[in-house]
Length: 353
Image (cartoon, rainbow, N blue to C red):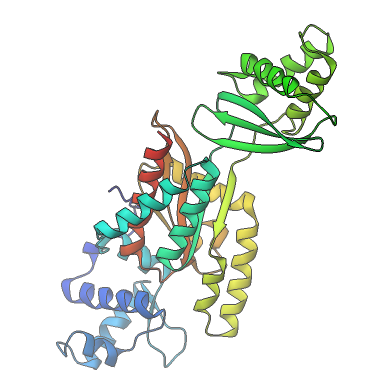
């Protein structure tokens, strides 16, 4: 599994004793989300160092910018720089058990009737397994298209289904004249498939509408209206990626003070700001493996003390078409969630292929 590493301070800059105390502080923080004091640390290392010696080391680590103290008499927490150093230099990423792998594969495959169903299920599954919020960036339909189909829903409504060559499926409901014969839907689909296959919607739309306007298309009036309605429902432009977020409520379970409530409120606003979040998720496409964003490393979460673990997934041509991940507080269980996100991305890529 590839975990993208950053170029921050190297863990080897710490001597063995400082490194061990630093590891204990970060691991305690990830278990509890709370500051840890010198007495607790001394017990965690079975009294190998006295509380006084531990305090001296903690002071050195704080001077190095790796720890901070929320209050004068409180214990220490890792800073964002400290978490980054731990992730890059000390994090021991485990592997998933066979049961977890089987669950991920089964739940993704069971929902595989459409791309959106599968990705929604994957987001819900990651939320459930991690205990935080699951995120999925679904593919854009700006890639070449493969197939168009119209399905009558009755009462002047038709479901338009567009399938991209990358495997993405999008559905839209369009309004059509009441009493439209089924043959008009078949003719409209055949006409669009002839002109859309292998082209993007934006590329083909202008030519199709121009052909209809010049009355060069071999379509009757009703069929032409179906084609025009289908093209209009997409607005004629590139489709932005679809963002799926599941498990927001899990983020409320980590609250312990008024400032936590404010951070949660801000995070919820960030998650609703889909454009900004899509921008962060698209950063995952720049690397081949799992990426971890801690706090202000991502502009989106700079005010909320949150982390995001995200991995890209690819289609059968090994082209990156989306990303999947988990967002939560900075004390995420990175060692467990990183392989979970990585494996889910691989399963999705395989199912798309």
